[in-house]
Length: 236
Image (cartoon, rainbow, N blue to C red; front, side, top):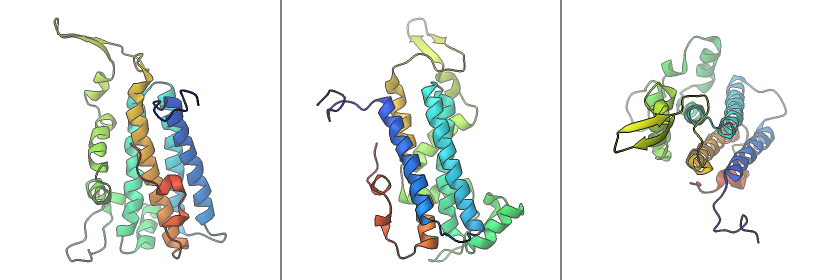
């Protein structure tokens, strides 16, 4: 056994990115298997759009990490969460076909749609980002802090400046910056956490997409229909 194959050896950046590639491939395979051979309706088209967005963002994330562009890669991590939130939001609609038709016709934006009346009582709520995040975090609590952290990169904050710092000197209270389109030269280990987070979010997004397709077209299929990479415990 080589050092790279040893269970105690740290996983490389290349291995982490390859995990994301396999996730992309598995999403395409399973989504294709779950779609019916005949006609699909507007909700299926919306889910297919989410699948395309998930795959596009995944490929973009890998490219940005390989080109050492941490701030832009983190934005795609945040928008990957957004896809999971909105597909999960389909389960909260009183009439999903009617609501998605309104989206398609431009009569409503997602955040102007309303949830169904809660089973335990209460009032319907607007499907805002805040509400969608809260509902997704009820089942996956780690989503909430990750959403907040990555939102700092979506909006202009000092996090973009911090990413350009190459050195600091506490005695002189000075910092050295590298202002360019690439990250300062760093060990690849600095990208491990964001890659692991992206893998985790992408897996959740894929599970959410496949669960919706399963619910719509394979209601009698259990969770074992999901491939092991999706159904396994969270990594990270």
